[in-house]
Image (cartoon, rainbow, N blue to C red):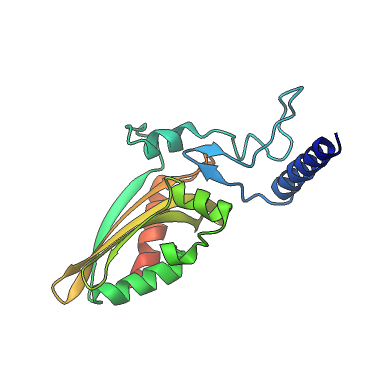
Length: 195
């Protein structure tokens, strides 16, 4: 009986910690378009730690995009390519630093949360130094004065003495932004980094 009480106490403390963490931040954790830290009241179904108008518990467009399905034409998903005079390794280092892409070395193998983050469809890292880098992770970009969360994918490959960069982006929530403005802002940011 005493052991069962301890287990229930620890479970209650864990749930309170998760609830408190979700309530104190707007940076919710998403996986495959589903909010993992958004909590609803189990009795009423009302949201407790998020505003469904700004951060839905499920983002249908992100689910469709992450599963490879076609998304609507009004989507804020886009892509662009550019060339850079920088060698592939220098381009990789600058892009990784600017956008916060994580490699496997950035994760603690003994941490459950890091293991979950590595299983998230948003994260991917593949590298062949001197030739090719492919990265995907969550990023933030400001458009028209508002900061937006998105999944950013970058592929950097050697192109002669320079490099070729292919970029793809998609929203993590359905908070609205101008897709053209987002593409222009990201492209300008990449150009500044890759000078």
